[in-house]
Image 1 (cartoon, helix red, strand yellow):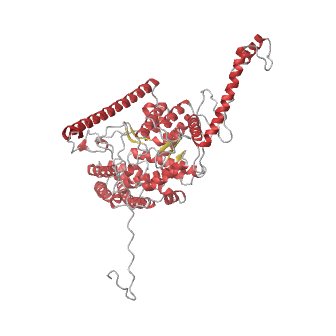
Image 2 (cartoon, rainbow, N blue to C red):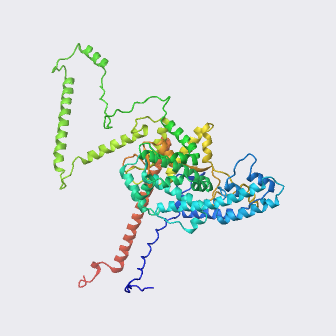
Image 3 (spheres, one colour):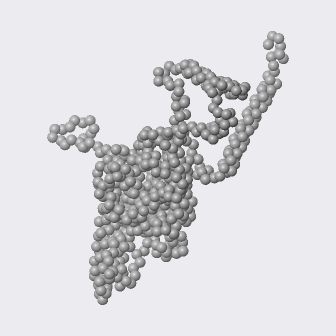
Length: 620
């Protein structure tokens, strides 16, 4: 080896340059999102970036394989299961009893173990009198080879996904690649929809999302432009989601994560249609065929959308008229006196009075008051002009009417917000009463789009989505769309569900959750989808979080205060005033104590040192 700094000998091969360091892994840390009661996963919680959740998922897969035993039944029954009489072809995972949400994944070692257990019982030499024994054994060998090839394809897909985001797959991720492949697929979709923006996203919110994405380590510190071009300008990543490896990883994932994946995939299609003028690529119909569950979810989402904009049977309320630029045209001032009153006054006076005629002191006083009011208005106008002369500044761009303009802008923003709650700002469609109720709550809970957004893990936002979901479930109970809720319902699983005889009767916690988590009613609640559907034209979502078309500096409210009566608000206000009063009293007590201590310390100092009047004349 040539030492560093030594001359290169003629004819010697140059020393290769050192390889660049690998990209840093994503900063996976525990998010610590507060749990919503009765829901396993609420909203777009980035579980793929939570190190504790990912560790629990991997450990649950290993524990499931330890407990799993390949139960070999009667050879004749196993042969009929693998080669049914009706001609159906059983999948490779079903033949070897591998895959599925109860195990979560498998590797070559798991495939070899399952093949050995079944091949001993199904060997043709041991079942010479059983028909289709040879075909069943041949199908068993083909299924094992198919699973091994599938593992290589899944690892290749995992490397492609991680590489597109600038990362590198680790050996732990490649051992049983199903869990890691599904997590990276969800991570990539979340990055695409978060960077593109959904709903009403102004330019400041989009720029904040880009900077937030660059600062975050959740997405391997990848470049924004590279990721978006990889998704929208090339078909390789989209075709990957239509491939069997991603579908296999989907089947091995938990139910809550599968539901979140479906919602992210559907929103990715909506984002692409919005970006390219209602046009999508030809791969999307193939994806819908690979994931037929998407059709059910889209039916439910369309039904919710129709309800928001269906005002049948409601009284028509005329929205304020607007000009070509969207400005509200003010209504003409109504006359204070009706024509009938004027006619009665004329009849009493015997006809119309002549101009300038005064028939009494009262009428003269009224004339003086009118003249005085006109003079006072003119004087106020002159005073305001005179005062504006002294509101000068060294800044050449100084505007003395800036404060008035700001107040006018605030009024306009508040008016626009009210219009956005009651109707669509672009299409002009009216919102039904049910939709206005929920859109008002969204405007109260969410921050302004000009301020930092509320993250997807915000507890108030997730509570709002959970309350809206319960209302929708109540509305659709007993209809045909109730079957869609099966995609989001939590499954109650026991040890007998997985065939674990050693733990019979025990309730198994869902994989990846805290073992102390109580049984939940819902596996997943699509908070972001519900808010975007009901709040269309009002709310927006990016990788930074969610926001609404509120004025800048909007003070967020708690969800509990949105639907309380005036008595509750009054009590709440009195309680806050009482708390503020007590806090002020405590501060005054502390100040008084500090003053008293200072006085006592001063007295003690004067007693010990003595005053200058007590000293001798020469010492003073």
